[in-house]
Structures are given as structure tokens and as C-alpha cells.
Image (cartoon, rainbow, N blue to C red; front, side, top):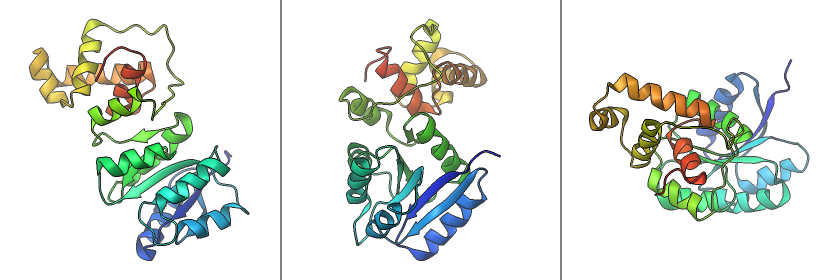
Length: 221
């Protein structure tokens, strides 16, 4: 049996926290070890219990998500953090990432995405969903505020001209359908290119593709 991924949750809305904890415990190989109503309570419990990933509510009355993230980054640098919010506000995302948070989720995200986020932050050090602005992410990578890792990738990966074009268009926030029209190809063909790029790079979604392409100097944003 694999050791479970140990989770901590800091969320001040009791009903939402209860639902989140229940959902997390239902995920394979995941177990919630800490529940807390605010950042101060979470940090107190982290002194006694080790965790791998913590979920932080952005807005909590006593030590909010950003304040808590600053402490965790300093005292527990190996712990990955996922910020929870009701909004995909760019200012929220930037603030979270600048303070050591590994990923950003909205409170209406599905269990499948939350599971993917947990695995991604542990394996690559980041998780941002496809709703996040690619231009915003590109700027963060260029400025060194986000430094993603791609364990499946190496410097000898070769991309075709079409794959590079697809990456450029993904960075411009075009959908598969829009890219297909622009390149005069079937949408399923574009989906195939996207899948191949993700397999080559180790990226988990479009944001990851953009991060990889910018980090490696393949494209600029």
C-alpha cells in the first residue's frame, strides 16, 4: 500500500470545509490529517502533524490565506499549498503565487480537477487551471515569479513546426476549435497535437504548455 498523501485544510466556512474534507477523503490515496477554521489554527496543528499539501481559504478572519502562506513558505518549504477562492481574479492569483502558493483553485471546481491539482503540485511544483489567463502566466514566468518544473521533459525534445505554432496559439488563448480553423485542420487533429505536446513536456494542461514553452524560450508572451 502506498502511503496516503497527507492533507491539511484551513477554511472558515464550516459547511464548505466539511464538504471539502469529505470529498478529499474520498479521493484515492488521499487523507485529510488537519482541519482548521483559520490560518492560525492550521499552523498550530502543523507543529504536531506533518502534511504534504495544504488547502488555504483566501479570505479568513484570523490569519488569511496569504498571511498563512508566507509562514508556511518560511517554516515548511517542502509543503505544497493550494489556494481556494470564489473568484479567478488575476490580482488574487498573482498575490498567491508571489507568496509561495503552488496552485489556485475556485471553490466550485470538480473533484477530478482538485485531485489533478494535488498530484500536479507534488510532481511539478505548480497547478493552475485552463481558465487562468495564459498572458498573465507568461508574464509571471518571464519575471521569475513562477518557476515550474517538468520532470518528464528534457532539453533534447524536438517539436515540429506545427507543434510550435499550436503552442503559440494556445498562448494566445485560442481554443482547439479556433486553432483548427486558423490552421485549416480538424479539431480532433489539434486535440492530438495538444496531447502529444503535453506528453512530451509533462505539462498537465494549457497553462503548463505555455509555462514550458516560455521557460524554454520556444515562444514569448
